[in-house]
Amino acid sequence: MRQVDQSLWVSEQSFSLLGVDIGNRMTVIDVCDGKLFVHSPVPLDEGVRNAVRQLGVVSWIVTPNRCHGLYVGDWLAAFPGARYFAAPGACIKVQAYAEPLAECHAFQWAKTIDVVSIGGIPKLNEFAFFHHPSRTLLLTDLVFNMPKHGGWWPQMLLRANGTLGAFGPSRMLRAMVEDYAQFRASLEKIMDWDFERIVMSHGVMVMKNGKALMARAFNEYLNVTVARHSVVSLGTELRCG
Image (cartoon, rainbow, N blue to C red; front, side, top):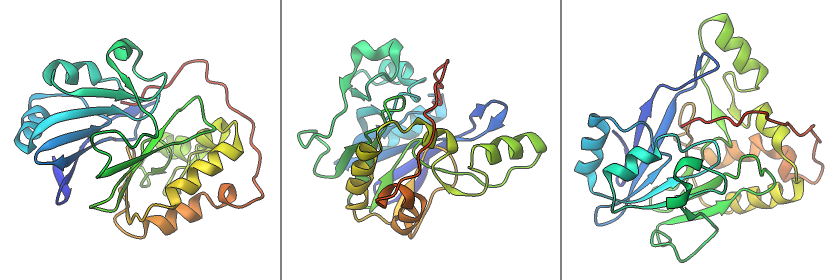
């Protein structure tokens, strides 16, 4: 576990997608008095389990979109006292144990962490979170910030997806947007937050000027004129962690 702020830690592991290591990042937040909020869990090995237990008590486990949640079953077994919240369509194998994520002010973490449902992308159903004390925006697959990779295959794949050496949404995500008005409204809610840092699941974290980078990356959607893309159809759902 790596400490990023006074009450925020990340755990970073490798994750291969189509033969390219895009990495995988979990965020852990001490919401209050050692009660931990776990965002997008990574594989639970002994080292991760011990490190998390040293931080406090796992109280909430969150699957923030449809593509993550591969490892939630192990976490629920290891931390049976935790409440589990999931985006619609996420983590089918343990969906029966999930409480629905929503834009809700009644969550026990609500005084510290805000949540916005990113509308207009039903194939993803991602939720964004804002941790007030650290001014940190938590995203999953809405943005990537991939460094340049060695080797022709990683560079070709990342370049084709628009994520090579660039911060912002992938071409695949752009193609998944079905309702531009809903998507724009969600982005506007995110931009109302006073964030500086951005922690995403894949790529290099943004430690400063995060709001300006988000505005630049999503300028075409935040402006009135929106470039239309063909909506992608995924025959097989991607699972990224």
